[in-house]
Length: 179
Image (cartoon, rainbow, N blue to C red; front, side, top):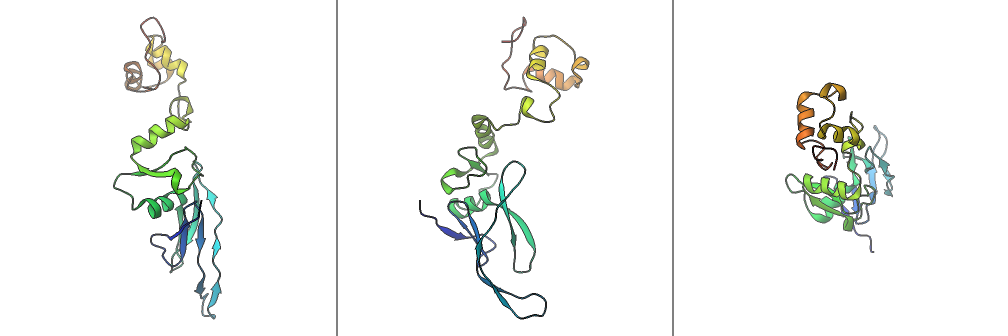
């Protein structure tokens, strides 16, 4: 695959992003204080990793202000066009570090969540670090065993689980026990 470079939106003449997910700064003249200008050579930038595994770089505008810029968003904006209203970047393979243009697309939040389920990266149910319940607890609640107080949850949450509005990814059981 041939690597194609394009200017980063809002940082034209300063940075470019490539079709394989790399970012480079461009050669430019800089001045520090009242000293002489000097040429800062361009370079491939070191990528850092954020929570959730997404890669970013720190970029500086002409005034020296820095900003974290996420690689997957830059690649999608430059190679797939401007972000449509309400859309997110979706990784086709579920790997947040694979920022090749072929792996990225614009999609809705619902499509992105469906991808997370498909790739096993969704943090629903027991995978959510804030969850108080286990899948066994949910099956107990749906089977009519236990009360809201025995599980330490609100009546609304208890009723939503029982009706299948919460923990919807767990199949509903019958009155005699889990499915």
